[in-house]
Length: 106
Image (tube, rainbow, N blue to C red; front, side, top):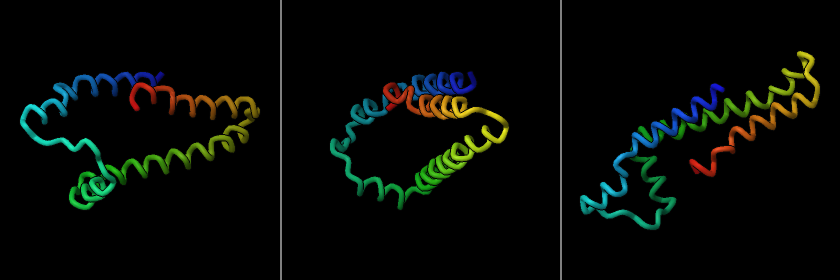
């Protein structure tokens, strides 16, 4: 239930926070928009913008924590008496939760 509320809140932030569309604003100002992004542009951004480096670091650390936590979840569950069916269901629900809204948010 908490994850559902967080997803709904995130969707609301996206729909409200990205109005007007940043692409349309840039085009209306006459700015050029690269139609074919290259990996070099992303690396240049990481080299020049400290906030971008922090963002990548935070996402990488968050994923590392999730991997560490979910790798120990089956051990924790079986130690407390859960059956393999419960362990499988728990991991399946976690994976489904990670990918359930990917068609919507990309």
